Image (cartoon, rainbow, N blue to C red; front, top):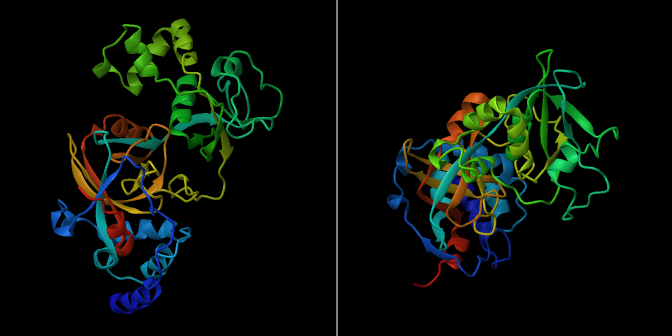
Length: 348
């Protein structure tokens, strides 16, 4: 099967170079092709799992070099052989230090109906707000009530801290009183810059930076309801949501490619340096190091730079606890089709 795929791909790849996914890098980027033998732990990974995740989004890659590889990928019995035959790892760097964090899909308690318990609404984006435009800040929405009574509410939740963490992650599940779940995805924002609640607590002298976590923020707001409300309003950024009904509950949330992402195999990246849909070899250091082939399937407002990525860690409270502890170094390499990999390589 691999050899038949190789013959097909080579025939299809015998074309001139086209502008497309990763065809050009920013001027501050440096790119170097690396051998698979130089990848730490490459032989020990589950490449078949990575191939399955790659197939999830490669069908949407509209590029003359990537399209035939996607067709071949769907008929392979060995993920490792597929990636080694058709791709080369490229180390892309700029002046920023490597940083790898993690994110998750929150699951919080809520209801389709407002009540004394469920008082905090999730809003759809108002129709008058156009993409790229600025809207009113968070305080005007949550305390001023300018969106009330317009039928924009998707659901109501019990905890305002949960709501803001849901907005930070950009998607999640609302666990309803009957045990079912409502999935919501990113639907836009109010155009104001995000300000970290943790950084604000440090700025106010309440905690040192190493003490801050999501649970610490939650507990402090509960103990200090007046000051806690003011803390929540200190972040002017506000995220609107949309219902996501076509994704089965056993699958992950939708990423930037509008396809489900997979825990421990999907990355949020900076698409200026790492094309969406590309395989990425990640060597993460820190307290919980691992080496793994992942797929770039998402983006994030805080994910900027050639050696910057956010790992999707899964759904729910435990995933959130683990994700919040990850802030590590290491390196990542993008797997490009062979022709493009060598075309991107820069001179020293």
